[in-house]
Image (cartoon, rainbow, N blue to C red; front, top):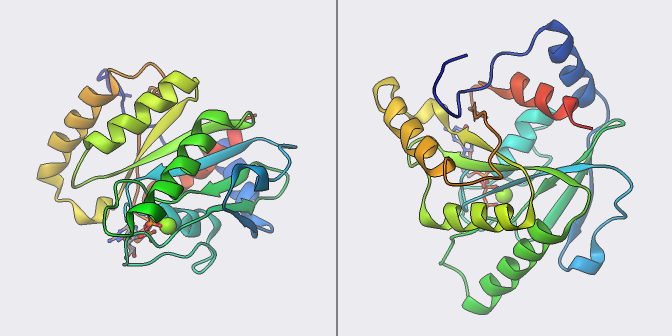
Length: 217
Ligand code: GTP
Ligand code: MG
């Protein structure tokens, strides 16, 4: 592990990797899409959610984790996910795919509705064990990300940054973006002290993330 704050998470050991594999080897299924807080499933287990700017790769990451390409709807069109989508794992947490934020190109009323729901969910879900906040490895933390992180601070929800689309960033540009993210995270008390670098396209970081989710209780 490096001595920098917010290092990239170490590779899982054999047992951790196996736990992660098992969690996602069984039935991962779509449970339901929710458009209002009163539609949330009974909180009878823990859950983790995937938050991030529109198009950052939330749905693609869920597909990569579960090894099921079409499970969460991913698309080139920003604003694809418009509901809070719940997925089940075998004896594990719910995986929650959230609508993106920071997407201006939809009718204002519609966007406002998603954003209200998103914020209500992030601040008021008692069984939400960890929020994964996805950050594009090419772009780093933007002000809308910072706002969401502040909301998570206030709500005392631990969040962990997952850098996405690692395959799209050149090695030489990576360190600079990671430093920018580290600087932003240092201002957030709810930030988990390790990050994960992923590519849903190439599979980088997916085993680590599976192991991290399998460890939560
Ligand atoms: P919204 O639901 O609109 O908020 O978007 P999202 O965050 O769910 O993004 P989604 O998974 O739909 O992906 C957006 C686009 O990015 C799609 O065209 C994906 O194929 C692409 N994408 C996602 N992850 C990766 C990745 O790791 N590498 C590359 N190269 N492309 C990716
Ligand atoms: Mg989506």
